Amino acid sequence: MSTPEAAPRAPRPTKLRPFGIAFFVIGLIVAVLGIPKLGPLIAGGIVTGLILAVGGIILFAFSFLPLPTTTGDEEPLPFFAKLTGIFFEPSRVFRNLRVHPHWVGAYAVVVVLSVIYTFAFVQRITPERIVDHTTQKLAEMGPPFAPPPERIEAMRETQLKELKNPLERVGTVIKSAVGLFILGAFTAALCLLGALAFGGRINYWQSLAVVFYYWLPVTAIQKLLGLVILYLKAPEDLHPILNQETTLQDNLGILMTPADHPVLFVLLSFIGLTWFYTLWLRAKGLNLAATRMGSSAAWGVSITLYLLLMIFVTIWTSLFSSFIT
Image 1 (cartoon, rainbow, N blue to C red):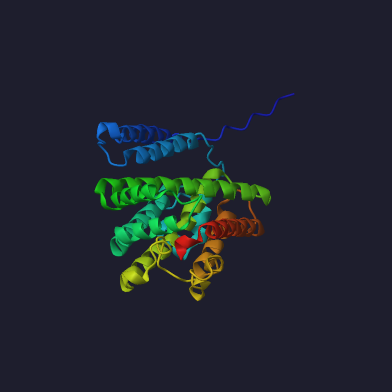
Image 2 (spheres, rainbow, N blue to C red):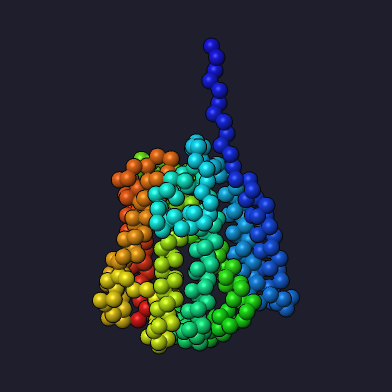
């Protein structure tokens, strides 16, 4: 009696390993050069280096995750076709990601748009106003959350350096890029777990590609329209905390004043056009890019993630509501 042949081992994205090792080594070098006793040669290098090293470790670990074994004759779409298609024909893009879950290009665009908006926002609002608002609200929290006055003043000086020093700002860009990657990786893991909970099946790389490609159009809308509004409005009319992500207000939060009802303001902020677009795009992406997932399951995952985020932000706001007032 012949034994059935074992299924071939799924390929791994081994091309990621050299990048993971390189980021880890560069991160360690930057961290060492940022040690105060050495100068420091790189301002703020310790935190930046450690975060870059962590990103390298994650990337190296991800190189062992199996790629999807989904077969298909479809060739991978060129990046520019996916970049435009995610706005006008997302179904075609997500179907292609099912077989070819390429995510780096979308991730890079999200990082660039986020960095451009953040740079413009800091220049427009001014570092002094942003830092003064943050430290003032931190001092108003009182014990046990508020640090002592001398610590707050030290934090103020450190934050001003981060927003004004060119090397510190480069470090901020690196930290933001790694942070977005980690957030995307975590969101992809939640999508994968959600798919399993709703009876679907999705490979992790398919999930990661979906996350960055549904982020791309939402980020483009928020950052590009936000830039226009940023320069149309007077700086004093913009909030140094609430408008850090975007100045676009397309939700019911505009009906409520944050200072009067901060929690209700946050809840209403989750009811808006961009949020509905995100829900729809994520559900469509999970449905079409997954190895197996029905439309109902995809919507279930999308709505669940939406509700979890709403609950988390609401709890955070209830604890630290002074920052948005």
